[in-house]
Length: 157
Image 1: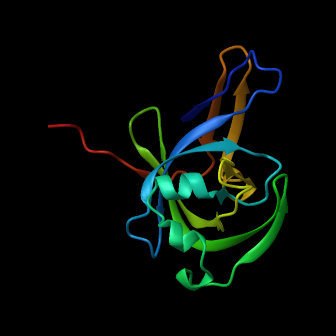
Image 2 (image 1 turned 135 degrees about the vertical axis):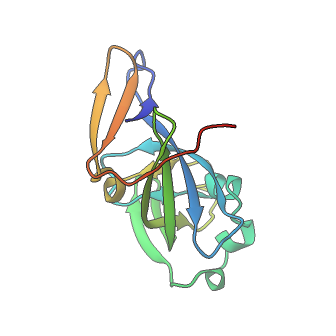
């Protein structure tokens, strides 16, 4: 089981989950991202603020040449943005200390003035691998993997 959280007293609660990500082709791009669970998003997106926090160089967020594939244009609540698609490993920390691993792609947004502060979005391309439970009484979100893909963490010495 993987746990996320939200503030149950908010008028419009925002569910979050923390995930370790590793972006292929960018060995320095490894770190924890706080994803907003977005059931309205078809794809998982990393916006510039979080991308730089995990080690994506700012210059890579401005130049098409830094990426293997040409950018794709997508429409969202923040307007139309160009995204660079790249392979990504997602490591979800489980309550028992193990990691649930999902290997897919992620869309990394080209940096613009309007998207610097947008949150990372966990979309259906990843959410389809989980049963999602919302506990309004406790403010917890639970993601239960449909198919186990677990990396067991060794016991500390």
